[in-house]
Image (cartoon, rainbow, N blue to C red; front, side):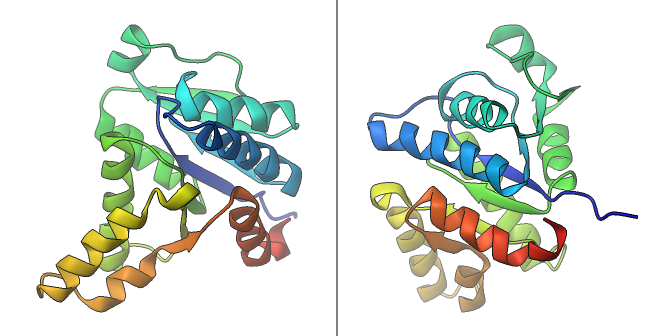
Amino acid sequence: MSTPRPNICVFCGSRPGERAVYRATAEALGTGLAQAGFGLVYGAGDLGLMGLTARSAKAAGGQVTGFIPRHLWEHEQGTYDIDSLVITETMHERKKLMFGNSDAIVTLPGGPGTLDELVEVLTWRQLGLHERPVILVNVDGYWDPFMALLDHIIDQGFCDPSFRGYATLVETAEQAVAILSDTFSARL
């Protein structure tokens, strides 16, 4: 019996951001994950970095699974061109299913929703609910202010210093894929 292919959950913006490097990184991540043999789990939107990541993974032959709440499906642009689409009732259900159907998390630049998703999986790690890799792709220093906030929270005694180590910071999509490939080499 073969081991199932690892699935990587990608949190990222439903907007493209102001810099071309954000879009290029999303495309490189989608392509790289597919070429390395990973499945993509994402928020099922066809807009912004989400859409770019999914389309790139699909174009490179990857398996793509999307989860989107009904209220976003009806008001935003969801995508039909993926392998599996799950429409949830709530945002919370969406996050739970995305996490439950993945073996690791990669976070690209994004807005408040991306930040919410990231903080929740890091908190779950702090609570001992998982030990999955969480990788932040720090495109042009995008996540530097977040890491500074974590340092401030730790310095003020509201969090154990180990919290900062729950996320691995990398500069490029290629570095994220390389870490994942090393981590899951037995399953690829």
